[in-house]
Image (tube, rainbow, N blue to C red):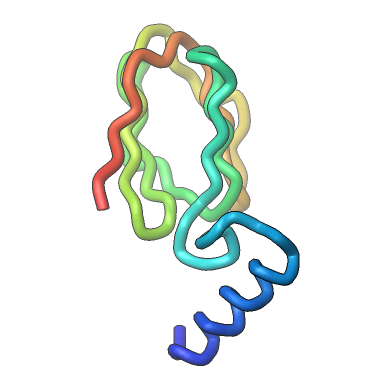
Length: 92
């Protein structure tokens, strides 16, 4: 994306009072305790098992480790992970 396009997204996010990066390179991740993770934004599933789910979400790789993990929803706009989430690891 051109630099002026990035600045435009940053300005729009400020005007809408959205968290930094929400309209840009990063997905919004919401945890509900250790039972559910909601990824809002473009994401790609890289690894999927009952103990590990690895997701590419924009500029980050995110790995969810736990027990009985499953994808209860998946679309081009996000995903929902359910189960017992023990750890969440971020890699830039």
